Image 1 (cartoon, rainbow, N blue to C red):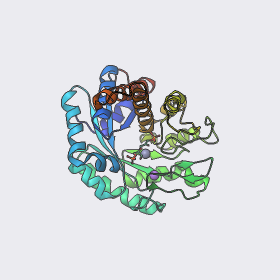
Image 2: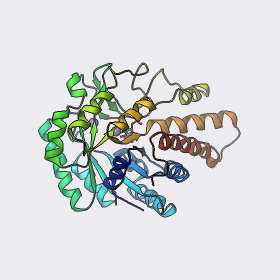
Image 3: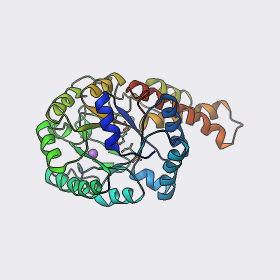
Image 4: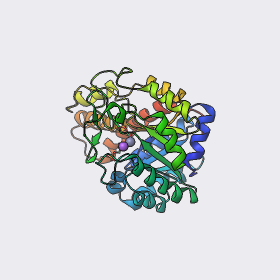
Length: 328
Ligand code: G3H
Ligand code: 13P
Ligand code: NA
Ligand code: ZN
């Protein structure tokens, strides 16, 4: 059944676990997440970016998620807008039936310019006013995602900024977070702690200087009742990179957010953990392998099946690692 994000995250906080929020764009990804949740007894957050809505089309994204609810009526499910760039995107998602929206006011509506604090407060507050009347949960973001190795912002597929930033801009300030929550009344807060979107997060296995898990503790101490969200939380497993490379893919050396660091973060109040890249890597590796080993095959179902299986496997793993087993 469709539930609000608030309901799921409140339960997660009460019972001390975190929920992976998986980005979905197509049928097989939706099926993979649902099968993984069903097999582990986990609650589900399916999130669609603006890019996902554009790729699938509004009607398809809406009905793919409706189909998930119909096929798995016993699983509590949140349908979430990922990185809404302005109130109109959030409004559009609510009109489509989403039960949760992210208003990402860390950047201006162009998706590139670093926003002022006042802009972020105003735009987030506006979405909260609109969404809460309709029982829809709101996630906001304070601080700019980006790398503490290069001191550059996180630019992905035409959104985000690669501007050089200060350590202050790249780490959410606990005092400002408290003020932000008070002024916006949002439900969940995405924080910046040195993670970034995509496969290329760190040039080495991250340590405390480039992945600021301790900062989460300070933020949580200041706003213990706000659910914290980690973006850019794919772990970029070396095994998945190896499969892609083995079957002709070109992936440079790179490291993601280690699962054990996410497990620490969950202890410090992180309740929603955004994952897209790991699913991309899993599916790409599986398709490359299948087609390399079966050059005579051309039925799309035959190569989509191992891709869906690989996506399901990584989702199951994260549900178990984050403590979701049996929580639905
Ligand atoms: O925000 C980043 C998510 O991984 C979604 O990516 O905008 O390419 O769909 P996307
Ligand atoms: P990854 O690129 O690390 O999977 O992060 C996804 C994300 O934060 C979506 O909002
Ligand atoms: Na951002
Ligand atoms: Zn994100």
